[in-house]
Image (cartoon, rainbow, N blue to C red; front, side):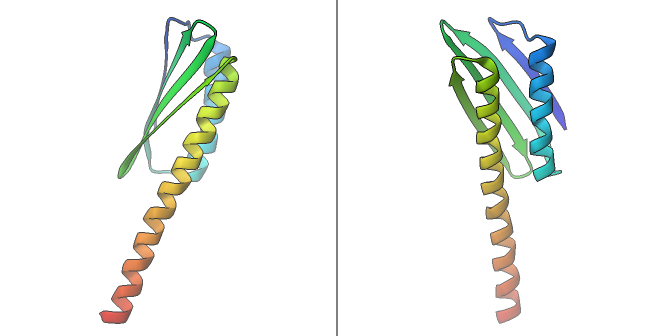
Length: 107
């Protein structure tokens, strides 16, 4: 999986990069078919913002988080992406189960 971490009006320190990389493991444990993840960190006055776009097979998931602390916004961003990825996986699994059930009934 490709991982890109960039900053707008903020320097991405090695500590921020390591924090985001450590959280990345949560996503890869859920699904091995992840294509790429792009995270953009930005600062607006007192608001620390993290935007993330996760590309998986069949969908593009996007989340954003704004907090007073950059580490907290990264944590919340990954929480939102994990929730979206779980929901996407359940939709795919339900669809395949329904197709198999219909094939057994009518096939």
